[in-house]
Amino acid sequence: MHDTDTRLARINLGLICFIIVVWFYIVVTPLAAQINIWVDGFAGQKDRLSRLLDDPKGSISQSNVNRLIVPGMLLDSAIQNSDKPDLHENVWHLPESSTPNQGGNTVLVSDRFSYNNAYGNFYFLDKLKPGDKLGVVWRQKLYHYKVVDSKTYSARQNDPLVKESQQPLLTLYSAGPLWYQNKRLVVTAQLTDPQ
Image (cartoon, rainbow, N blue to C red; front, side):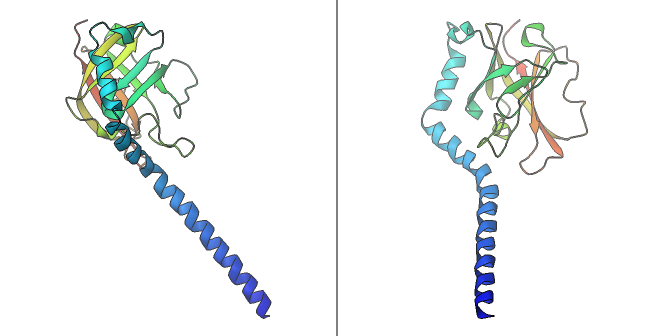
């Protein structure tokens, strides 16, 4: 009887340790990205991305890859144009929206967080504030934008995403605040370059 109690106590202790490890992973993994942006920001990543946007020769636009560059999010990512998006790894252009070269509202979508990738491309989307600069390289031309608005919407409310616009806009869209999958975070930016 005593051996059975000891064995059950060890099994219980093992299960408790396993639960603590899983809990720690679930809670700490999203916070690891905060440490990463702090370290990369101090390592000059934000300045390097800002210089890309300010390059008067536009060498960044020589790339054959459509890209989104957001210094405030430490983001330089290819933009995917396909029917089967991989939101964990890429920024995806919403097909029913416009493109930078056509004016109107260009909508780009990506994940904020996934457990198989420490943080998604849009993890720091909530860090953008009005006045922040960002750029889109589209068909070998660099388009400069400035953030004008950031709002959280219900996941059921699609209106703000593909709204028609006379002004050239860029809309960045992802899941809302971490841990709230029923919300969507939408950041809107206006084109600052003349077309």
